Image 1 (cartoon, rainbow, N blue to C red):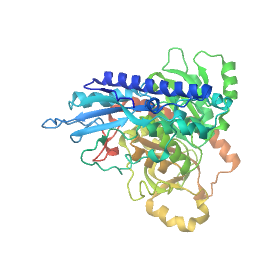
Image 2 (tube, one colour; image 1 turned 135 degrees about the vertical axis):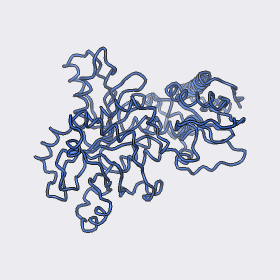
Image 3 (tube, helix red, strand yellow; image 1 turned 30 degrees about the vertical axis):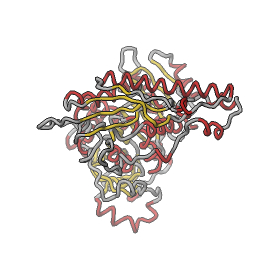
Image 4 (cartoon, rainbow, N blue to C red; image 1 turned 90 degrees about the horizontal axis):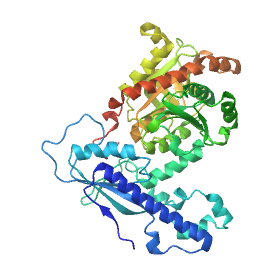
Length: 489
């Protein structure tokens, strides 16, 4: 067996460099062995296979300073002496994130950093993407699984995020919420659902439930692609790119060529340096989609995800096109009941609430009482049944007790997932119908609503993100952290 390589007493930058080198060596060895097998049918030896493993990052915190460091920061904290570790995938992509987390642990806590090889194998499906070569070689997936590492779903889970890992004497504590295998699993799922390379996903995410928001986003994005602007390109499903300075006719041809309908949750990425752009994903309708996409987005550790979609207004005083800023959720989605029971409160995050309200004021030009007539703050009911109106006799009392002002099918799930997976979240909905007051979503009225409201609503979401970029120091709230957290955000 290959002897484990260990590098000790590293600076954060050195640690990331070693992680990159070990990961590169492991993936190169795996790909080389797979190429050889496809050509010669030569099986990797046990020693060769032992090299197909993720690198491990370890933080050692032995000498606790007295008094312990005090910081208002919500992450990069060590709560007890001990060893903290995790496996790492794609360290080059996550370089900025890793340095952001490791720096304070060394500077403030005096922790030591080690990098070593691990025994957690890298599944070949996460490295070798030339699937056409496998088919041409006449090799089946079952055959490859006998000789090469494959995804082991029994070892992929959210036990750390869900608080199911109890520290045991002599065992290392988790360093972050997701290990390498869990991250790689979600990265491949993102490609499958969104139709674009996961590397294009930006650190600021908007989620919507109707494709008309996508159409508007594409037009707004093209207008932002200026030679001297902050955004570099727009990437659409199928990894189709529109760049600054492109002729209008060519851009339109590329938009038409994007076969977004092939993907369940198509994503559009307005790319900026360092991932500081915006990704908009049409998650479709319903709690399963909302949970599915956020399960996978969470491994990228975005700065936030915001829901900008449609809802039914529950108050007579509301008008079609009014906005709802959710400050609480009546969760009737049920999909997360076993993970975050409905009696667990999902708090509104003040930083995001303020940004959304400020953005609404800027975009609409309305302030004070004028804005309050257009934007209502209150509870949103998130249902798992689109036809909840058909059981209104049963629903009426809960709506009254909750003082809910709107109903949808995704917002409560997205907020609960943000709370569960420590990703800042928020919801700004637009009233598209009033089911309790005779204003239902008929085709004519719906089209008129789409034409007048979608552009402004999306602009508010984008403006809120720009405001949050300037306020990011306070964005990662301690409200999302428990008393027994891994050090990494």
